[in-house]
Length: 168
Image (cartoon, rainbow, N blue to C red; front, side):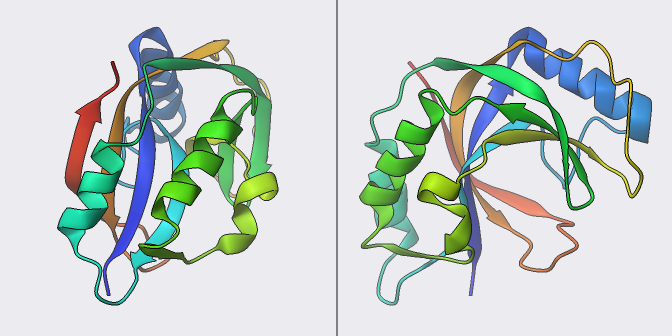
């Protein structure tokens, strides 16, 4: 069964700063096989009888425009060092996409949705705490909404772009 994820892709100066941080700490600009992003809808699968075409059409019609969000400090979630993002505006878009997709998909981690949704951008992965990370962006801009098929294992070794659309 295919696993999917829906992302807002970070753009502009914020993307450059995040890639610089990633490269400084890991030697790579890509983490978990993905460019800097905010997960709008966590890992999910299609309900029985639902086609990828119907999923794509529903996401293409989702009302979302070019948007920004404020950064809210650095945190550690499991082995991920993350840049927290204020929920203003993002939570509403998250809840709206859940409504759009509720009859089409099943969540793998429903406990991380709705009011428990924790918007963030993964900077990199590390077993140790990381202090003194500098030059983090204050404002994050997002320019694309992307649907990916993702590695269903915990290794997160691969992703396959299903489609992306520009945010107007």
